[in-house]
Length: 195
Picture (cartoon, one colour):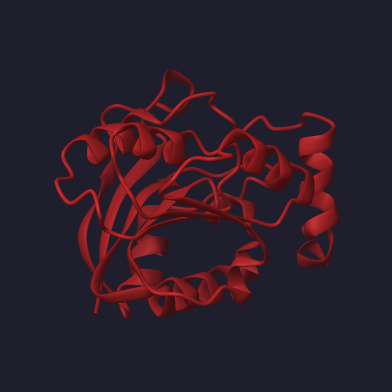
């Protein structure tokens, strides 16, 4: 049932009425810190369920040249296309992540996984694996806590290890030390390398 309501209309409505409690208004500190140590500015980076795309904006400011944002909400995508109009190095795509076809050096996870009904998690892992080039990375944040109802939908480190380990080498999966205050000690920083 939840997969039916969490469709394009649902997410578009969330943006239209401003019901975006997940939106930090800035790049999440653990993600920013990770971006700051990256040297290859030409690697292809996907941000699925990109929301207001603070991460993409920051990457552009740092000189990255191949960023793709995919989101399912038409009104949001229109705003993003206006926001990034004329900027080189970024593509804003309206579409269903699970139908997206390409190959990337890195995918950034930031509140996309938790927006999907838990029954879609295996499909998420398969699609991430498909979209990444050999030995490429899935990096970002996952919630290490439960929520009432959802979205967001929570989870825990043991569940994630079981879910990802057949398809990814778990290079790092531990509590993020520098999350924003409301999420302190409830986020896991992940670096998963495609097997």
